[in-house]
Image 1 (cartoon, one colour):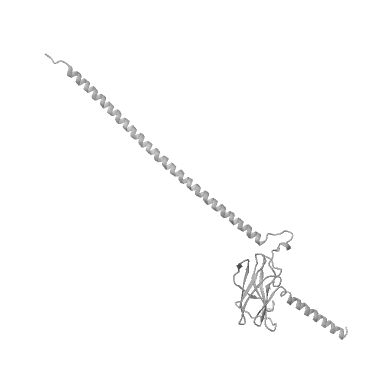
Image 2 (image 1 turned 120 degrees about the vertical axis):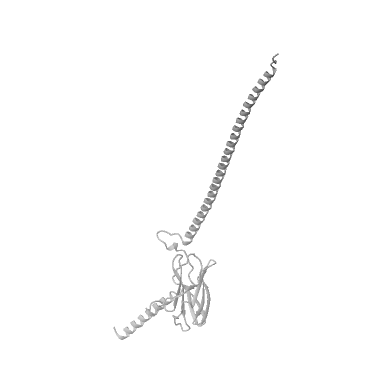
Length: 255
């Protein structure tokens, strides 16, 4: 190959490499929101897109300075993010650097805060903290011009469509409600059984008391009968004695 051809080939190779680098660099930022804090630029969005429920993801921020150089020296407490959706807020999440200076692996200027979205819809990221003493307070929400809206993965599932996280949550809630209702019913049933047992015990005690009273009455009646019979016999004896005495008093005296 002649020198001019070699030169053209080298230029073409360099252009292809540059284009590839631009595409690779731009790919993760294409669906990000570009925000500024003083001289620093932040590309904010999801680490992985499309973004699906039930899949581990991360809030991603790529930080560069005024000259476009990646900022690699932020500490774990320099930036924080609170994620919110449907009126609910996450805890404050910390960012981990993607780039590892020891191994040279990762992306310069990239920081990730891991999170798993569990409900479809739009999400809001509220970033606070500092970048080299520059205050950061930025709020961005997913949308057509920012970053991806979270969706259920049903459309990409094959061959079986799995229940969504929302469906599973609803079913678990329904089961919990039924268990609670059954527990409540069981408690009422046990209360009714306890009340029945108490009533039965009370009735048994009353029956025993009535039986004791009846036995006492019968004993008293028996004693009364015996006393009455004895008195009757005594009366008969006394009557007989009276008759004998009366007959003796009527006999004539001797002349």
